[in-house]
Structure formats: structure tokens, C-alpha cells
Image 1: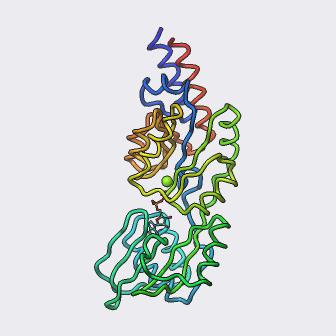
Image 2: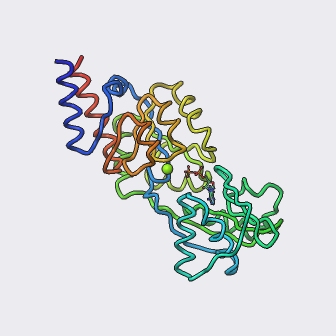
Image 3: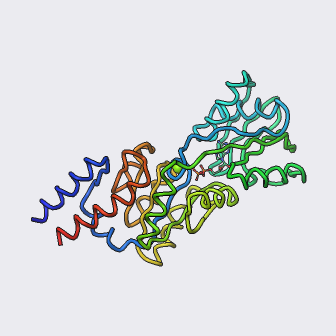
Length: 285
Ligand code: ADP
Ligand code: MG
């Protein structure tokens, strides 16, 4: 009866566009204590858009020039905005992407950069820009600084709205007694604002891509952990978690690393996947 129950369970899942890749995850599901979520593309739509630019046209021109060589979702947002405003990019060389921080290259013999405050090192942010930064971050917008040499020329705010179903999904998980956590490389203010919108209990922000799995390991001290994510940088966390749940829209490596794949990219399917696994496992036992 054991393999039959498993097949029925995975078959039912497939009908709901929930792929259970192996039977092993079923055992883990019944005592999950914490569900950890990546932010971009998991809780949010993953389609960020530029909402505010502080500074003159040079800001978007430099940003678009540097982001042409980046594959980050923020880069796509900046390039879309540049296209809308008919901005053409400049000549550059020495492009470099710095994980979790931003990108830089040489333009007109000067080092130009786009990224968060971790990229700035000793470049000074003046008081007005800092006030703007805080205001925008509190509106759940990701802020990147654009600069050249040792000067900040301005900033760009980028918004990525939560999926319409994320709030309902989080609330259903909390009702089942699960703790919900957001794990993100984005700034803490932005992460807190989004967490509040969707009702997430706890936030771990400013996490460097290589450190996500370590945070999962840490959370496992309080019981079994499910991790839900979509990005390249989520793959180690998906593997580390007791149950890894990948978005079907995610990167190939995330999908490979997950034991469960949600083809509809809807977080309400996390609840369904956990319920289905629990029922199937009880039938196998
Ligand atoms: P996430 O958890 O949102 O996927 P990442 O680790 O990819 O986070 O990025 C974290 C932060 O690093 C971004 O919010 C941004 O501030 C900065 N960053 C990374 N890549 C870029 C880029 N190409 N352009 C501008 N900023 C970037
Ligand atoms: Mg993501």
C-alpha cells in the first residue's frame, strides 16, 4: 500500500500543479515549525519597477549603462525605465558585479557605480539623500545609489509589489501554528515594510547571497524548516532546509534544488503542498 499511497499523493499534487519530486520530503513535513521565504519573486511578483529618481538625467544614463551587463531583476527595472525615457547608454569598460551590493564599471576614466550602501565604502551620502533614502525605503521601495568617482549623483527607487495571494497564504500558515520568516538580501527597512503588508512574523534582511543557507541552519535549532525560494542564491538554502519548495518560475538551479515545485507560483500552494504531504504520509504510515 505504501507506494500506492505515495503515487496517489503525488498524482493529486500534479493535478494542482504541485510537483512532489520525491517521497522523502513527506516524512519531514509533519513536524515543520518554521516556513522561511525569499522576498523577490517569491513573496513579491519579481517584476520591479522604477518609481522615483532623485537627481538629473545623468543618474539614469549611468545606471542604465552599468545595468546592461547585469541579470539582476533591479537591472531589468532600470533598463525598462531608460527605454521609456529614450535614454541611450555610454561607453564603458571594466564591468564588475558585486554580489549582494551592486555593479560598477569605468566610464570616461572614472569608476561609476550603482548599488546599495554596502557598495559605497567611504563615499559620503549627504543628509538630504539620506532622508530621501529612508522615506523611500519605508514605502517598501528598494533604493540604489548612482555615483561616479567619489561622488553620489543621485538615487533610484524601485518597487516590487507583493503577489496578490501572498497575504492570504501567510495568514493560513500562521493559523496552522507555523512561524513565518522572510530572508532577503534587500535592506531591512524595505523588508520590514513588505513583511508588514503580508503579515510575516520575522525578518532577516541584508543577508549576503552566500549566507542564506547558514540562516536556515540557524533556524533549524527551533525545529524543522521549510524554505521557499526562486533564485540562484536560494539554491543552497533550498537544499539545507528540511523541505525545499521552489517556484516554477524560478531559476533552473532553484527548481533542481527543491523537493517540491509550485508551478503556479502562488504561495497559497505552500499550504496545499504541506497538507497534501501530511495526508499522504499518514496514509503510508
Ligand atoms: P535578493 O534577496 O532581493 O535577491 P540580492 O542579494 O540579489 O537580493 O541583492 C541585494 C541587494 O544588492 C539589492 O537589493 C541591491 O541593493 C543590491 N544589488 C544587487 N545587484 C544589483 C544590481 N545589479 N544593481 C543594483 N543593485 C544591486
Ligand atoms: Mg528571489
